[in-house]
Image (cartoon, rainbow, N blue to C red):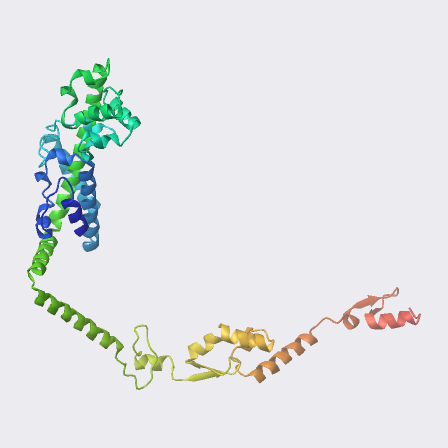
Length: 371
């Protein structure tokens, strides 16, 4: 809320008050004059307040449905707006005599005199004057002075010499369009205020506690503030000492996910007291049957098998000795050699009489001219 507080006290519609007083004042939007409400600065401030309160309410009350609350507020607002019973907007913004210039291209609320408007340049001033059906000729200073007249004087009360020729009908159309736009702007702003006030009602206890905390801190003396700060530092140091305290673990049980030793029954259940060494992994130790069985597919065992030139297949599961792995690999290679295809013995040939020979016999007989 400190950012919103600074935005409030540095605005034209706000006042220089303490932060604790601001917590009481900011929901009371009906006390702000209507001519100050119809400014861009106030609209931006109101949007910032509503966004902050909505975000805070969603974080502190996650089970509440904000959309549902706002839908009820909107339904009630439509009835109250039609009857003219919205607090602070009973006249729907029509009592503001300066409603016409709200539709102008240039927001004159940011300028205090005509000399400041000169910096906008002749083109911008000409467009703004044309939008209001005023004469757009003359020097830049004359255009600025003519446009600045509309800040405090409604168009219908301006002298006709300031208007362009044949602009009477256009003025009436502009007044009608601007009037409709003004009503719509006032309605949107009033709805935003009602939503903000509804959230303030739901967060009333939180706002009261915040104000009490602020007033309590403001009432502290320098010695009390120093004592409170030292107390917080001591508390933080004691918490860090507790975290750094050495954990008592005489059985040397493995650490769990919380940084503490696992229960002894869980240690016995998984057989974590059994050590399995694997020579292929460089005599690395694995504690527990589960970790031992899993390590055959891990990178350390695969790297050791690759260094031995042996494929890491299922045939070598449970093999941890280099010697045993080599002997088994030789047997597998021999078995693969017996089952290997030998064409000189297994390839068959047939002579013209229908006799069957293997390749070697057929080649010898044919070389001797016997077949």
